[in-house]
Length: 118
Figure 1 (cartoon, one colour):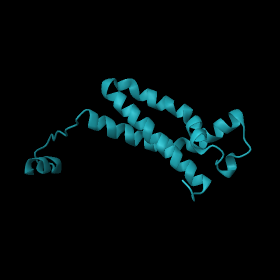
Figure 2 (spheres, one colour):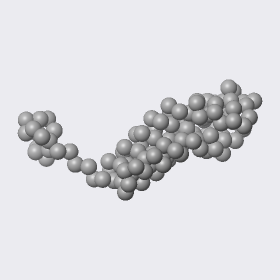
Figure 3 (tube, helix red, strand yellow):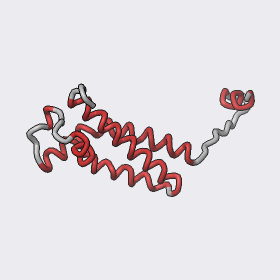
């Protein structure tokens, strides 16, 4: 990740963690529907993942913080990026895992016409 600004490295790392936790959450949810909670709880270790990947290349607003302040700042800054990637990959893997098939309830619908034409 050379040549990227620390803010962009931070964002990409958060997105990667969201994708990883989403895949884990979605795969486990195929077996047990409540397993998505495990993926949601994995958000709480986002700061560990980010610090392990970035080491000393944190964005400027996070430099100088230590301990609980740094952990809280990373979690606040990472929340929305992580959440959107986690939700997307959880739903994607879950949908693929259960072999979802749409069911049209009206023969006049566009979905029914698309399914009947193939």
